[in-house]
Structures are given as C-alpha cells and as structure tokens.
Length: 170
Image 1 (tube, rainbow, N blue to C red):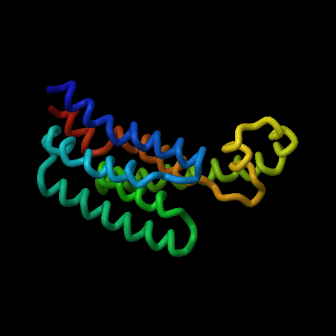
Image 2 (tube, rainbow, N blue to C red):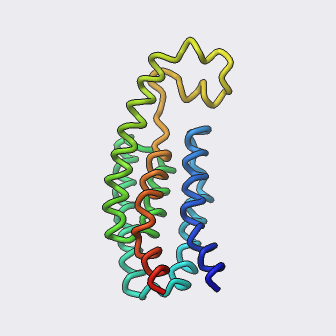
C-alpha cells in the first residue's frame, strides 16, 4: 500500500516538471497536464487520509488561485496554461504551502526572467546552431515561459504540504 501512495504522491511533482519543460521548449502548457494534476489529487488525498474539511480547503485555495490566475491572464501577465497550472498545483499544496509556493514562484520567476533577459541580450551571436526551441526562447522581447517558475515553486513547497505531511504522519 505504501508504494501505491508514493506513486500517487509523485503525480503532481512529475507533471509539474513536464509542464515546466513543455513551457520552456514550446511556450505551451497542454491542458491535459493540469487536468491530470487535478484528477490525481483526489485518490492521493484519500490514500494519505487527508480529512474532508482539509480537502475542501484545498479546493477553495485552488479556486482562488484560478481566479487570480484568470485576472493575471486578462492583464497579459501570464499565459492561460500558467494560470491553470498554478491552480492545479495549489490544489495539492493547500493553504499553508500555497503561500510558500507563491513566494518561491515569484523569486524563481524573477531570477529566471532576469537571466533570460540578460541571455537574450548577450548570447545572440552563439545561437546560430541552437535548436529551434532555444532560438525561439532567446528572441529579444520574447515571452518568458513562466511555467518554469511555477513548476520550481511547486517543487520547493511540496515537501511541506499537507499531503506529504499526512503521508509521513502515517
């Protein structure tokens, strides 16, 4: 049974890594990734024995994150896939870990964005033989794949999440 629970608990981190890599290489986070993260939450939460009220809190946090993500998308600050990924990951993180997630996502996003802007400015001469995805990423004034920061923030916050804490308390 413990192996099954561990497999369920790996769903969110594994899929956020996939989402970050997809965003980095294609500037698109497919809907199936966020949907799979959401669907995977319920059996994982039941398997670790998360109380129903805690599950409802997680749902409320995810809904609030979706609303914030929609507003950020409307303002053109993030993409639609980023908003959905943010909501899906907060479903797994709950209230306490979501605050840590937001902090780390902002820090990683700021550092990543700064490094990307500097790289775009100084590495253009070296991109002649770069793969197409890297050349697109390095376009001056191009978009920044914020799914990378969202994935990093989720991975950093996840070990302290109620899901992992509930598993370790068993």
